[in-house]
Length: 226
Image (cartoon, rainbow, N blue to C red; front, side, top):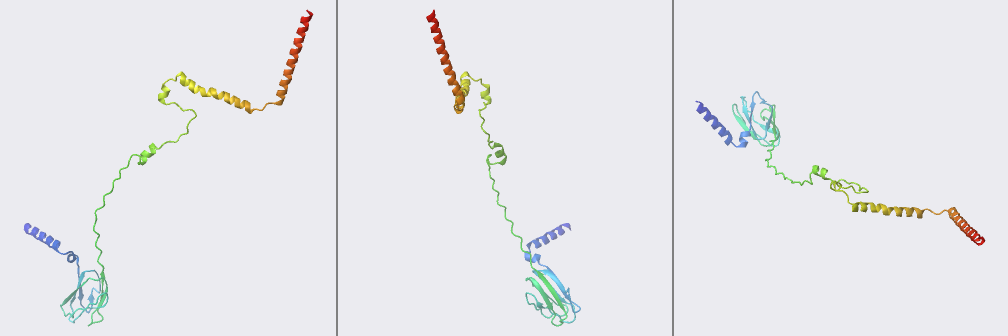
């Protein structure tokens, strides 16, 4: 018994799978002509649906559209007869029974949803190999630091460990020795001579000459007296 049930379920699944997609997704709706009225009087169906009208009254009825994208007119249906129509065009349809004008109804056909776009495989991303110089972290650490040059270069660790020779000390001291006379000369040449000092020097020179002459004459007179 269980084997038969499993076989029946498998056949049902196979039949559903083999059905075309349009037939499998199509829906069917029924409208009854009863009591001189359409039931339901208002119906909303998706495009591709089939609507079937069945007459349950003793009087004959038919279906004729009064508005809508398409014009529909069914044959006259007697009691127990049915008529079907598949709505493929979306829109609003109004219809009536031509034998009984008071029997009115309407059907709204919704547009079928657009098929989902086929999925495309995503394009492979390009892997960009950056050099260490292009990475922000390396650039931040390797950026050169601008420093102002100092007046006297500082020796490196290897140079500081080696004692300086006498020649190196003389070379370092030589610019300082040569710069002193130039500085003094520039200072002396740049200062103007005071005229009073020049005059005082001349007077002192004349006084010294006079003293030398007087002294020489006195010594000569003493020699003559002796």
